[in-house]
Length: 168
Figure 1 (spheres, rainbow, N blue to C red):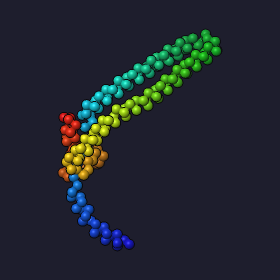
Figure 2 (cartoon, rainbow, N blue to C red):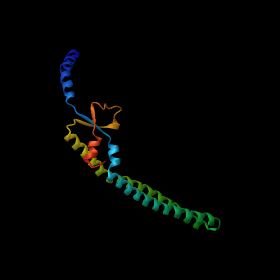
Figure 3 (cartoon, rainbow, N blue to C red):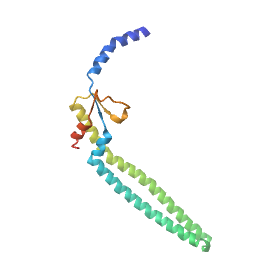
Figure 4 (tube, one colour):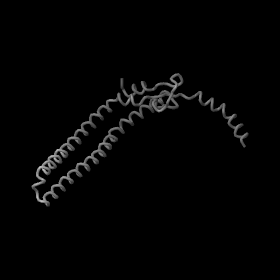
C-alpha cells in the first residue's frame, strides 16, 4: 500500500512542479491602502463625531448623578427614612440608566463602525480582485499574514491597487 502511494506521488510530482511554474503571486499591504483611502478618513471623522455625542450624553448623565448624590449626602442626616430610601432609589435608577445607555451606545457604535467600514472594505476587495485579474495573478496574499514573502518571486501589488483606487 505504501509503495503504491509513493509511486503515485513520484508520478505526480512533475505535474506539481510544472503547475508551480505558471503561478503568479502578488502581495498587498491592505492596511496601507485603507489608511490612504479618503473614505477611511471620512469614516473616522464620522465615528469620532458619533463618539463625542455619546460621550456628551454620558457626561450629562454622570453630572446629574453626581449632583443628586452630593445633594443626598449633604442632606442624608436630616431626611426622613422614607425620603432617604426614595432618593437613594432615584440615584440607583439613574446609575442603571447610565450603564444601560453606555452598553447600548457601545453596541450602536460597533454597528455603525461596521456599517461604515463594509463598503470601504468591499471597494478595496474589488480593486484587489480587478488588479489580480488584470495582471494575471494566481494569488494575491496579504503581506502581514505571512512571516516571509520572497520579493523576488512575488510582486508587490500595493502600488497597482492604489493606482486603481486613484490614490497616491
